[in-house]
Length: 414
Ligand SMILES: Cc1cc2nc3c(=O)[nH]c(=O)nc-3n(C[C@H](O)[C@H](O)[C@H](O)COP(=O)(O)OP(=O)(O)OC[C@H]3O[C@@H](n4cnc5c(N)ncnc54)[C@H](O)[C@@H]3O)c2cc1C
Image (cartoon, rainbow, N blue to C red; front, side, top):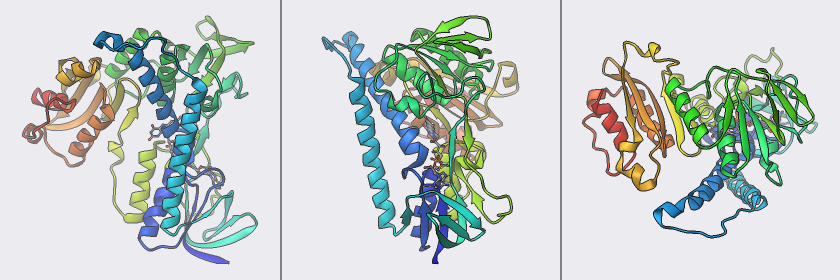
């Protein structure tokens, strides 16, 4: 039986990061992947959706460029080509990841694996002895009762990646990151989009002011939405909502959470589970932080995991979220409008704000809607992680013209 220091099941961000760090530490590593290296993130999640978002943004930017004196007659797009570009890019990234893993000396077994004991993994009728085992088996799109996936009319986040042509209309169930990103992609490509959210506000996990602004942006982009609403019944191509309204639609995308791929025998106490499979925060960078801690003993702060929703403009937040104005009492708060930044006017991206909340001279949360919000939030994460006070941040020089200046301007008002 082959012997390894570390056996990993699952080749997504949790698995491949664990493998790469461990190999660098001189451990012999074997990784089992039943599908494609890169997992959900690279093959069906983060990366493909951002490729579609980029295409949608390019299309919209060219379409609206007349106001800055750039004209493109007969603008059109070929959706099949966009899907092909997504496939080629994902494949390219996957190949370079696989190469990196091979160069690091990691043994990759491309088949399903199961745990036999605390130290034995079985795959393809062969057994492998591993001193340590880490389970990184990820997650899958959750079904909702009455909205079971048929993969043609009722779609999940995997199905929608490979449509050969765009629907004319779609109902998206759920307004978390996946729902909002797809609403943005499809509406940019002129699909008639309706979002149905069961919670009180759009993007239920976000700050109340962020949710309000997203509602406004949805209206501007002609994305219809319902909150505190669910689909009660489907008949043919008609969805009846809990408020009694009926919507005719070409398809339904269910983006209402993800279940975990576990199936580990409870008796295997020595086995570690990280990433989506752990059922905590289902984000790629949370998975890689867990891998870093597991292998290199570098701790992370679970209360400082940033959230990002991509598209135009990006939405990002970290730290304390408020669900109403009343909840904010007793805290210092600034909401700095992006429209006050020169760079935002240069880019034609003035819709958004940088909201920073502090208490006792420390930032306790930030909520940003802006172009580059994904990069901006990282500045706040670093400040919060290092307990940098508001007064100390005021001393920092921020380049001009940038969106980062909005952070300084906000901080100066706290
Ligand atoms: C549409 C979408 C968009 C997303 N966008 C973002 C984003 O922008 N940013 C972000 O941070 N996160 C995003 N996510 C979430 C992100 O993809 C996950 O958090 C991340 O992939 C989790 O990594 P993981 O390694 O834990 O699991 P996964 O990436 O799911 O990898 C698990 C792997 O394990 C394999 N596996 C399972 N069981 C076995 C077995 N028995 N034997 C062998 N192999 C097995 C699977 O085939 C899979 O490849 C998105 C997700 C989706 C669906």
